[in-house]
Image 1 (spheres, rainbow, N blue to C red):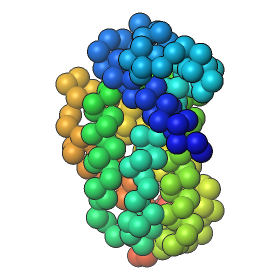
Image 2: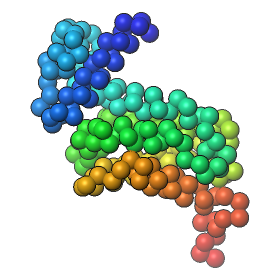
Image 3: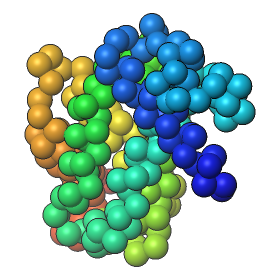
Length: 198
């Protein structure tokens, strides 16, 4: 992609997030965003159809930025060490909590939520699919990815709905324990839910 396009999109994304930390997202206009980003309105429409698409790109890009190291983290091998990137991402969410509450809440954006879920699924598919995992020996990778993505967004939504908001490191611990808990059902020697009622 043309570096100028990358810079313009990044400026618009950052401008929207900055403004949304200052006042409710619904009160932020495209004019506000372009003024903060230092671009004209026509430049905005060269890159984005509307504010929701811009916000979706901004939140997906934030997840992408912290996930680039995750395939190197030995999560797929069953190592119970929380990757530092998880805490970094939750710090980003905490800094933009109002935006994430608006997006992931009961009346949030299904479009943006679906894009975030898809990005998490791709991250998990890369980690599990590339290296394999003894935690999921008999499950299709897409099923594992979908389950973890849904659980991750569920924990994040429950966390940002709390008042006062617990610190990101607490949420990271919650999220990591839930993810490990899902895998624990399938670890060698663990209780197999298919025979739990026997």
